[in-house]
Length: 301
Ligand code: PMP
Image (cartoon, rainbow, N blue to C red; front, side, top):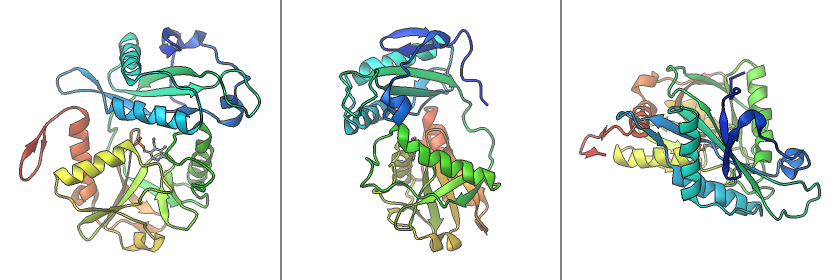
């Protein structure tokens, strides 16, 4: 298990910086019992200038608010105050390369009725970017992504992650590194906590919105494709298409951009370093540390 905190770790809790070991949550909360809460996964990086920069904070806190609204959870915070609070947590804990976890959770209420207020915590812990160039072996899961008519797919809701945990644990128990989930129609959807791309005939393809969380990293990859003149299509991917893919990768805030070597018994034929995914990985790596990205045509800051 990773070490998330120690006796000297501070978190943001309802407006104050408090020691993680002293923070208390209500055990009589719908969040604890029913998974009825929302959260974010954000990263900060030490930039090439030595400063600490949270990557896309507005996008993450916009999504946190939208997730809360989708679940009818009261949400009274501005992005500005939460971004400031997040930097305060990083400074207090002397963190630069970090993973940041804001969580909106309910007060005591064991019924299914709405809450009158919400609580917020922002936790952070050290996370090194791009640890190694490991490629993943991935298993197409027997667990499907949830029915979009049963959930708000764009909400990053706590309870949705029971599905992710089941799929991921099952894949790992079978000797793989991670799961790849299909949607209820049998098309490829996404990983337990990351979006999925394949490369085929010089083009990237990624599942369209509908059954997936359309991630902030996915949107960044689409932007990088435009900058790097890489053609990309958002559409359904039938599992049989994986048999003829040239390469594949996952992307997400935590996963960043990570290559896939094998999906069940199919090995991706192209060496990772020769793939479009590797180009995107390099560009993403530069972007998060605020390094200039060189494209063929122009230099984009
Ligand atoms: N899909 C799921 C199910 C996720 O949990 C995540 C991680 N938030 C992603 C995709 C990737 O999203 P993002 O790039 O915004 O981190």
